[in-house]
Length: 148
Image 1: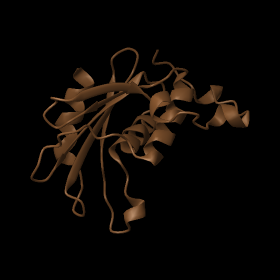
Image 2 (image 1 turned 120 degrees about the vertical axis):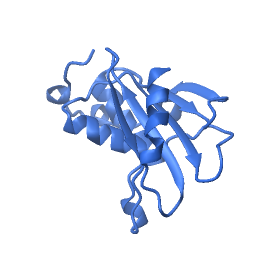
Image 3 (image 1 turned 180 degrees about the horizontal axis):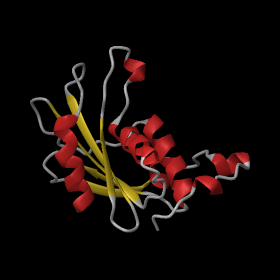
């Protein structure tokens, strides 16, 4: 999968002096465009940005908000993951919002470092009964753009 390869390619760009854990993410559009992100840690741990949210923020800055899915992969400084790395709770919430903006259940591709274990799921499965703008009666139509 092209998006998973793109996520793997950016792993080395992670800024991770505290955890030494590298995460790469790649959002993909309906027409095949890809926007990547990596984790960026901070001495104030709560200010750390995960790769998934970094990709969403980068895409937003580029004027892109409609996506069909996201792929992610991770590795340690001196080890390969043997299981897939899934998004944290905050990232699941942001990806749920992206799915509502995109008007579809976002595909989520999770991979171990060596790509010997891959799980393809959706944000609805990862965040059942998610809460978003639709639950608040908020119209997000002005934020929805092409990309389908």
